[in-house]
Image (tube, rainbow, N blue to C red; front, side, top):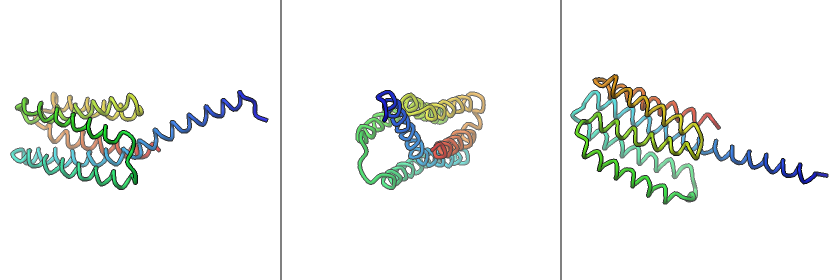
Length: 180
């Protein structure tokens, strides 16, 4: 016969297992998005380095591919609407609108790139506060690399961000997918 104390310990272990399973499933699902956006960053920043006069078009095409790819991944990963999905898209829209408004105030193209990197990596860090330390570590790492690239490697900022930012996101996404 199981005592009430033993039952409580077992229930606590079940809860811990459920929480860890949810965390690692979240990492696994998010990893492919992060890999996709790492690839987009790599291609777009490399394009900016090679053809800076086409920067706007490069990012327009890259971001469009990233959004379409993210929608496709979402459709493939889920057969039903997830709880809070509408709020997520609303919040993302607010962030993007804010980013576009601020970008119009910034004149230097590299500073605009740094702003967007820091904005989204701050969001990663905030997600990490609730969803797991890997989000926080990835966001903080790419944030710091972005700022250092801007200040230390300015003439090669776009090339550095292709390698460090895009490569960092691709590596981070792969590590998140392997966490499960």
